[in-house]
Length: 222
Ligand code: C5P
Image (cartoon, rainbow, N blue to C red; front, side, top):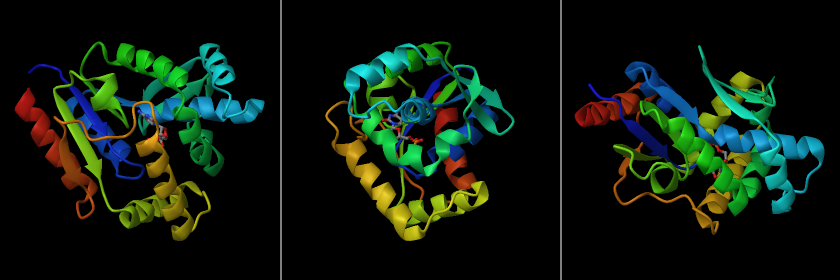
């Protein structure tokens, strides 16, 4: 069997990371959460008081930062300049600011280059917004995963409860809808379904069912 690249894109809360992790584990592939990289630089910008609108300052900050992803039992740990930021990059503050940072062309250019390098060896499952369209246009399998806003907010709610992050369903629907809009309408590589991507609606699928479907599609390519 050969190793392939699997690109999973879709809006916030569609189940991408949960399902991508399972698929990667089953195939013995590396899971790469690109959203975590945008979250890490957003966290640093907030910490250092760098304006989220200042593209030049953010780019410089990113150039001086080291973001590394390390596989762990629970999927993946995220390190920023050697410090474990896996948890702090999931807070409401970072979530509310990340799309503004991710909209800058200079930031995306650096991130895409780093992500392409991470995927070079093959045998990767990468999730994000622009993976099929920009990062890995040659990926053997491209999946565009979505679900209704209500279902995505419900999942985030359950997830947040587990992590001890306070939120209401209403605020989550609002946050998700706002991020969808920012991510889909930005000028630089917006969230779109690539022409050759397979659409997977996870609204009424369990996590295992969605993972099974992607594994079936992946095996057909190997
Ligand atoms: O996947 P996650 O929800 O953690 O991503 C956080 C944010 O990072 C997204 O809302 C989007 O603004 C940005 N992002 C992106 N391109 C990617 C991955 C994430 O613009 N490939």
